[in-house]
Length: 113
Image (cartoon, rainbow, N blue to C red; front, top):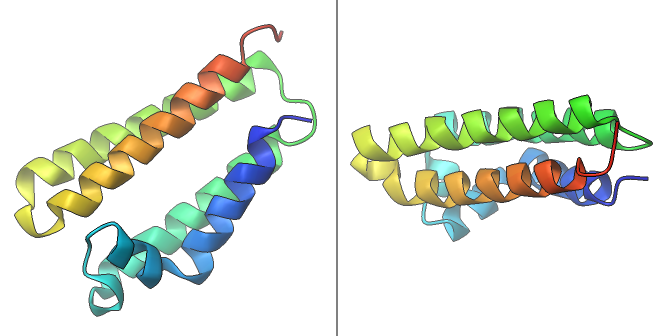
């Protein structure tokens, strides 16, 4: 079993169920920003789907594609941080988290086929 899958499932569940708490802790607007809460929940669903896909015995391709998805998400958050000062801090926190997930996925793809 890929050890990242349960951790990613927990993160996805948190994003889905308590996004306002996580947004507030990351310096975002929390429950006051309906769009941010919705985006966090959608991201939670993506993390749950990715956890399911990488759970049992993922191949190298699945893990690399997951890392690419995380890198793309990080890039989009860096772009948001650049253009939206009100969401800059939460976007930068999310970018760092996405890069961490991507790096972990890429590293775990190491000896797999």
